[in-house]
Structures are given as structure tokens and as C-alpha cells.
Length: 393
Image (cartoon, rainbow, N blue to C red; front, side, top):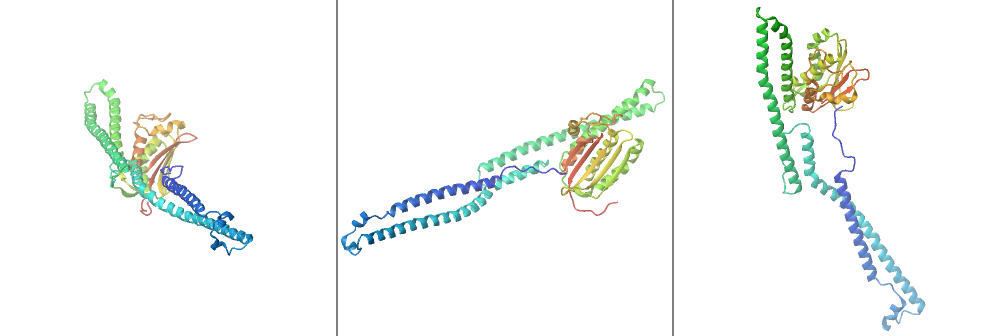
């Protein structure tokens, strides 16, 4: 299954900022309503008989007896209470409406403020897929977010130069090593063709040739590993099932020589990528399965759409020696082999699965492996799906 980016387990920062904006507005609104209520209640003094006695006689001469005055005081008290209650009710209603508007405005403002940070995150996610040539290039005022983006761009620039220098070194070293190895092989073969060659040389030559051949494969593997570390810049549509069928046809003779039973279920698996690199990926998996499974092993190859996602997958499974679960992850490291993974004929150089993982990553995919309960290994490659190319033969 294709690996997906993990999401934070807590609330997104935009939601938290919106809640904080709303809570701050709510607290300010409660304080304002409280102050207003207190001031209005102080302005509307509670009526009393003493206050009525202070009213001039020309105003109170028609108020009548004491009972009438009590009725007037109750009416004034009722008016005061109703006024304060209505003030409080409508203030709370207004605060609720304003709080909703404040949350909506806070959501928009938080999104606008965090947009540059989201741009940084998206770029970092794409760079994680080995696209080190991309930059954020954030525009806007010279604030903290701009400084963060510029710092991140500077880090990417240094990483890009470092990885490019490393790939150039490996590629150049591999090219330089090819020539002397080819010369050594030619000299040995010519020497063996001489009828007057010494018996000592004739006896040692096969061992030297085998060592030289293994060194050549190692150099070729290093060169391919250096190329596969780069992101595919011009991917073309292809079908993994067609690539797997072609590889199995090429490896048929090797399988027969080792008495390896190969079964294939090749369902359409359209994707995009570099056909040469993907062919090398499939070939490495099939060869590893046959070599490390041993004579008489069973190998099963499957391609098809990922039922649990939107990508395509390739699985190569083989029987063979029992592998410890903790050794499996180390198989993808260069020159690493797990228990029982060393080929008996010495044909392996320890780069097969490293190249597989690098090619998968260069195509935006993943490579995973699992030890089988009965012995052997299952390797799965997940790649992004491409446009359907129709049925394949």
C-alpha cells in the first residue's frame, strides 16, 4: 500500500486559532456587557418613598395618599427591572450573533495568515519525495514566515548541491572503474587463448575472471543506484504487467537452470515512469527471488491495482530460508544481507534491493518487504496509478 503522509492527531492550528479568537472576543464581550449593565443599573436608581418626598409639592400634590405612592413606586421598580432585563437579554443575543461572526472572520483571517505556512508544508512534502530542485520562493513582507521560508530554501539549496555532488562522484567513479576492469578481463581472456600460457595462470584465471566479473556488476550497480536516486523528470505511461511479462520472459532460462517454479498473475497496472529503471526494478526482484530462494524454490509475481488505494502494485514472493523479522528492513541497505540471504554462487553484490527502493522512491512510490512464515521473502512495490493503456498481452 502506498505510504501516505501522517496527519497530526490534535486539532489543526487553524481551528485552534479560530477558537482562541472567538474565546477572546467572548471574554471581551462579557466584560463589556457586565460594565454596561452595572452603569445602567446605577443610572436607574431604585425608587423609594424618601425619593418621592424630595419631589416638589406642586408635582406630588395630586399623588394622593400613601397607597397611591406605593403603587407608583412598584411601577417604577417594575420599569427599572424590565429595562435592565431587556438590556441584558438583547446584549446576550447581540453577543451571540457577534461571536458567530467573529468565529467566521477568525477562520478567514487564520487561513490567510497560515497560507504561507501551508505553502512551506506542501513544498516540504514534495521535497520529501526527493524533488530537491523545488523551492518555496515565498513572496510578501519580510516577516517571520518569510524568514522561515527563506531559511528553508537555503537549506534545500545546500542539500541539493550535496546530493548532486554525491551522485556525480559515484557516477564518475563507476565510469572510471569500468575501463580497468574491462581491460583486465580482456587481458585474461587473451592470455587464456594462448596455448603456451602457464598452468598456474590457467588454474587461477577462472577465479580472477569471476572476481573481475563480480566487480563489474558492482560498478554497474553503483552507477544504476546513483541514477535511480534522482526523481524521474520525464515519465512516460506504461503498464507494470507488460514490464513484468518482459522480464519473466528474459529470466526463463535462468529459472529453468535453477529448477525454480515461477507463476505469474499479471493484471493491468498502468502507471507512469522510466521504463528502463522500472524494468531493472522488476528484474532485480525476480533475480533476487530466484538466487536467494535457492534451487527448486517457488516464485510468484503479481501486478495489479491496489485494492486499498488509488495506486498500482507489484509483488514478488519466493520460498527459501527463514528470515528473522528484524533483518528484513536491513535488506534494503547497500551491501546488507539478512540471515540466509547470501547467494551460494556468489553472484550477488548486495545492491539489488537498494536499487529497487531507490527506483520506487524516484517514481513517487514505496518498497516494503515481509518475511514469510514458512521461509522466504515477499517484496511489494506501490506506485502511483497512471492512465489506463488498455489490455496487455
